Length: 144
Image 1 (cartoon, helix red, strand yellow):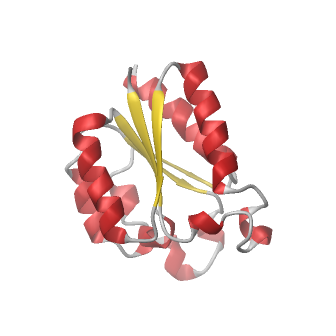
Image 2 (spheres, one colour):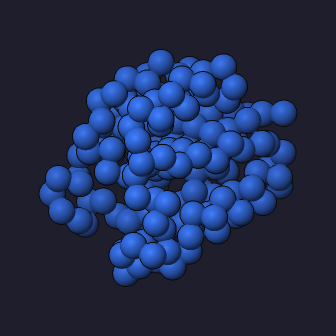
Image 3 (cartoon, helix red, strand yellow):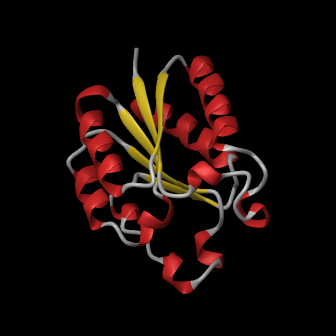
């Protein structure tokens, strides 16, 4: 079965508690449940992963090189700082979709630049947690 990695960066473990006026009240567990249900409908498997540590995310991207057909990634604040995550994604052969729950272009100026976008086939921003399922659906479409 086709496997898609859904990766989440720093502070997303606090989803539903941290700044609900920006990120909403759903938890990361809620997001995972929704993605797993959609993956079942689409006939794919998902590995869901979150870390506050850049190296752990990079290690998981390296693992994905052998195990995943595609990656959905919400790198959190690493979006704006991590050339290392970009380099790891550049070593991955499958499609990548970047997700942000908030519209990063309506926020502080430093959030307007994404290193990850240079590698992503698409970027979904501003649709809250619904962006994850949109990304998953589009990634499966890209995979054919």
